[in-house]
Image (cartoon, rainbow, N blue to C red; front, top):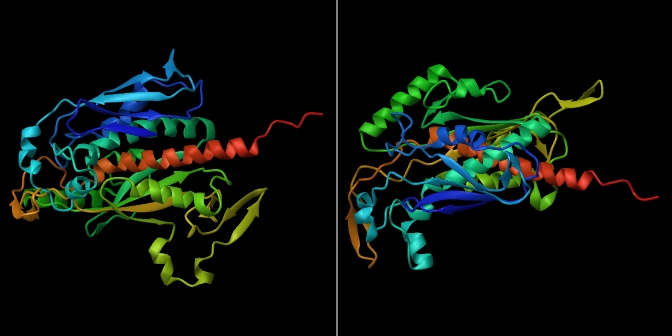
Length: 355
């Protein structure tokens, strides 16, 4: 997957390589996930108005994938570069403005350019293709939900929550009571001109045994890299994660059983991955997202001449990125799993040897 485009350029998009041929694919397969990611969808996200309508430019014919690169594009329409004019000479604290300027000697200051979360449109579009491959060919379901907003923690069972429950409220938390508390907290923080972060729970169900690789391409390592490449991420844990450090080895081990030829574990502290390879149990992990860096308050910073100055609080932003990050986490999960599914199939399905 290669994404391209800047926040306030003509558009953003993605090129997908390696997608198998003859898979039914049209814009209608992609658009639902983009609608879940787009700005302006509720009162607790950025008010930027973008329909984010996707267009497939190449890689399909008569509604089927060709096996050639798939290119998709979404136009940017709600341009307001004047809202960022102060950022032309001043670096926003905890944004990538200074690091990009230091690295390249040039940056697109309009909305953050390439560093904007608008780049994730391409990821979500590609993830929709990967999710379709996983569901139709392997029966794998990929889901994510908001589990924690600041100190409000929902009770979510990785084995049980549904897509319908996630989409039943604007914060995308399947625990209805906690969801209301989360929404109220986000609205309070937004009214104060501030922002908050939290944790997203990601799951993949019905993943077969054997996906992944030892050592450097471990399944959990690739998932970690994929999640940490998303904007605003600050942490990743799989299975018991950091909480597992409080257990003993005997408590943490997942007992293995067999029934009618089916191997399973009676607990899942491993999070569905052992030795870098899926073990057939539900894969579940958590991703920590920081508070959005843009706030409506004056902050100390420096300008392009490295002089100390202050930056006024302005711009359009999410007071909490979590609701729109749910489809992003799903997309990156699906991309990693689809890659490993195709690798596993290629390695373990050799044609018969010639006589």
